[in-house]
Image 1 (cartoon, rainbow, N blue to C red):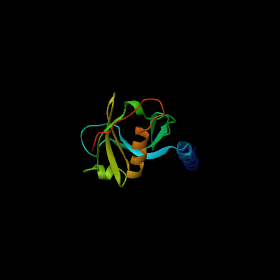
Image 2: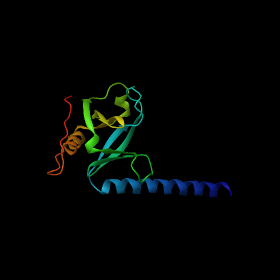
Image 3: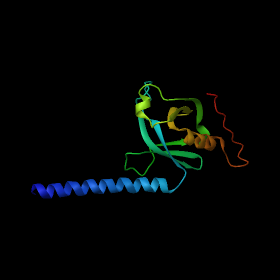
Image 4: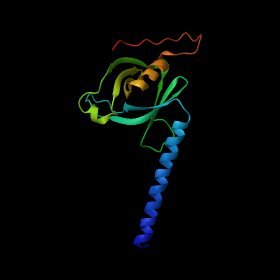
Length: 148
C-alpha cells in the first residue's frame, strides 16, 4: 500500500467516524426533551475537575445523560426523578468557569448512589427543576428542593 492509498483509507475512516458522530447527535436531539448539560463524572472535591459536556434527555421519570463526544447509543448515566434531590445551586468557581459552558449554573444533587453535580444554563435549570417537581396526577409523589 503506498502513501496515497494509506491517506485515502485514513480519510475515509475519519469521515465515517464524523458521520457516525453526527448521526448519533441528530438522533439524540430529534426526540425532543433534550438539553445540553455537563455532569461531573469524577467528583474529587476540586472545582473544575471531572466535568464532561453532554446532552440530557428527559424520558418519563428518568434523566438520561449522554456524553457529547462519544459514539455510544447508551446513556453514560441515568438518574431517576424519584431518587434525585437538589441540595444547592451556585455559579461556577475557579477552573469550572473554563470547564463549563458560559452562563452555567452548578446544581449539587444527591441520589442513593452518591453526589451528582450537574451544570446547565439558567433556562435549562428552570426546565430541569420543573421536571424534577412534576409527577403524574394521583401518584402522590412530591419532591422538595433545598433552598440555595
